[in-house]
Image (cartoon, rainbow over all chains, first blue to last red):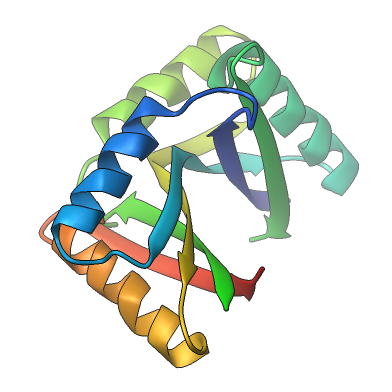
Length: 83
Length: 83
């Protein structure tokens, strides 16, 4: 069965996010001063074949831990949908 | 009122995503051969102050169009939650 995983990988809350800080001050310079905080991470959509949702779940966890996320600095979460 | 916007910015479907292709072949090399397709974009969380949800919506649209997304190559979507 075909599944699509929507993965978000974000810098850990405890860490500074210099890219987010830069974007935040750029938004202020553009006049959008209501913006308080910006954090920037990755969004990955991954389509995969798996026998069932549990297998798909294991596979996505594996992909995140082995390659996609650097768990020293980043946290990931994902949702799985069929199709 | 305080709102949090969860923004996804992805390369347009019509365009090649070389970063995604590279990650896809790396996953295959790691033995995760069930992976079919990978596309990589940005995930941005933005906290902002706005009088109501409509204002917050307008502000996030503005931020995406003016700075966050390059609409020639990327499409964005977002969800707004209170708090």
